[in-house]
Image 1 (cartoon, helix red, strand yellow):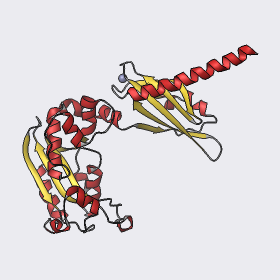
Image 2 (spheres, protein in one colour; image 1 turned 90 degrees about the horizontal axis):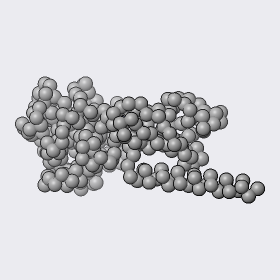
Image 3 (cartoon, rainbow, N blue to C red; image 1 turned 45 degrees about the vertical axis):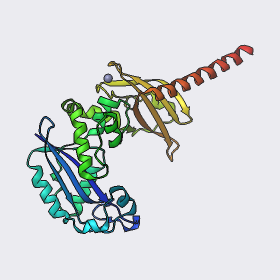
Length: 305
Ligand SMILES: [Zn+2]
């Protein structure tokens, strides 16, 4: 199995109204593909770099031009997308998966393939390195910029916002991670980073009814995938609850539940599960303290009567 570390630069429409809307809403047109081919031990085998002459967004958006230092003049020397992609696809070979830094590249590639009438099924299994990096290095349940990740690892950076350089940086990060482990546990890594959100199909008469809805008050542990039950419910605001979820494995989570009112005056609920960290723990404890204080005041009032 080969790994293709992929990074792309894309141009944006200069005005939202100028965006292509059919057959997909094209948020960006790819103008550079940079990639690094790795073997099964994540050692570099080869690199790929191509500039593309855009067909739809032919004038550089000022912000993109500034960031990538790609000028209108440079675009003229690019290949048409079809040719560039054919070369890229041939270079990738037969059996491989794609590694990226971030969530944006793959949807962007898919949209561009569709626009150019190329079968999007070409896209193989893909892995975003960010969640693997988060699980193994930063452990904060947060996304991290490529340059920050390089800095954290003490790696000298390649100049950013060039597709090949960013792919080289990402490949360098891969070599510093336990990628086999990361890919094996990818579903769990991903759950930690992407807030795990669930919209209950249920209509509740009162918000408090949600607390006893098993589908809403249980979720899968971000670390081990076991079922965890919410506990320690607190009212955060009217129509908002927070709770905690402690898994058998030791992992803690913070749960937020937000209610919206339906037209028939019932409530619907959305639940988001976050990995517990210090600031979330502090936040929960503050709310817990407030609740205990209020309870104390109420008890004192009753005592006086
Ligand atoms: Zn667990």
